[in-house]
Image 1 (spheres, rainbow, N blue to C red):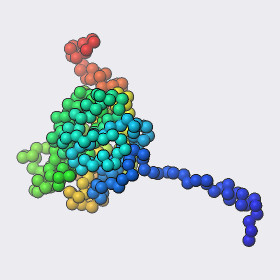
Image 2 (image 1 turned 135 degrees about the vertical axis):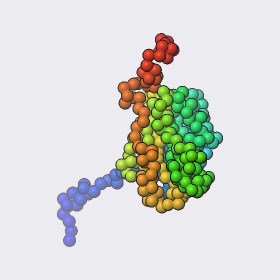
Image 3 (image 1 turned 90 degrees about the vertical axis):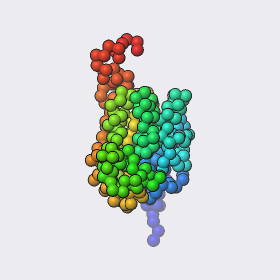
Image 4 (image 1 turned 180 degrees about the vertical axis):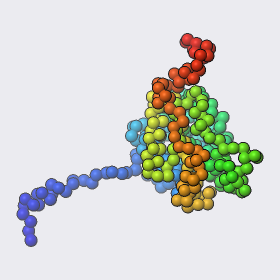
Length: 289
């Protein structure tokens, strides 16, 4: 049976000339297989960062500062300049880069052992100085790379390699809620806590990272996005069970949400917000200071 010429023309016209791309690797993410443990959320967060760099068109002027920890290999994946910092010193290194190259987009990528333990001083002082940089903070409640030891964010009674009977707060103290603590500092412009266990949460995490990058580009001040995460390997769970454990235990202790947003508070930058917080303190609001 032979089709009429008119029918053939209609079929040819209806056939798309090329497939429509709806999902592809971000250009800012190198074509290398992730070598993180199966089920590790680092890969999700890396992709979100790369997507934001693409969409903001800042890959060429982005500088990543990577930690000592599981993400010490992140230079294998980001298609931008990457600097390896000593353990905990990423905020100090990022500060130096941003001050020398103020037009660059500088972000530090740190875990809880790196940021909240050995690097806590650098974290607090970079934040209180209002350094115009962005920190992506991965909180999985343990030291991941070194085998799963107790970290500053380990939950009360949580079992780790160095707390086999659970974290005893009478001896080890209580976990540090990093986002809540940094939100009290006048130098912080945006502090937000997210997670990546569901498509909805992944989209919210991307929005937070993109906003943090924009705040840096607009000179608003220091920003930190905390990602409540998992470590299936060291927790001894499947990826699915680890996310369930995270939802049941970590999210009640580390609630998701925005803890500081100076633009949402009605200020244009951290200096305006800090002056409002200073109240009627004469020296703090002295003209010309």
